[in-house]
Image 1: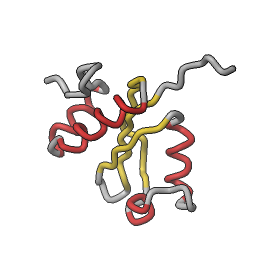
Image 2: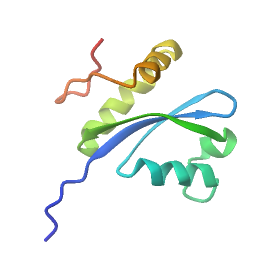
Image 3: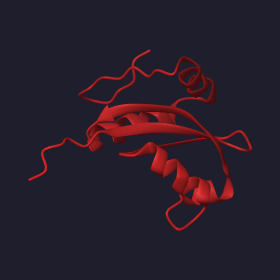
Image 4: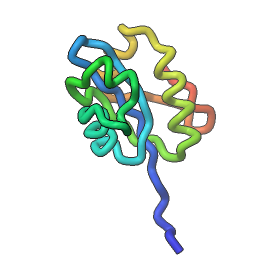
Length: 101
């Protein structure tokens, strides 16, 4: 029986046309390579807006919490997302996923 707890992370990718794409994964480097390849496992958005770099990555914990944090991250303004990338940190409530200032 597997006892290792899977850690989900939230990430932001900067595209070549300077857009920001957010997602969640258990293996961010693998997921980035999938987006970069443009193959069947890449998100449709990433096929239209090619990845330039992995701008931000933060381990969150459970899938449910990571998806809650991602949802709130996607609601931030462009300037707020740029601050997250610049600071390389994101404070959030570990129960609700709500972001903290």
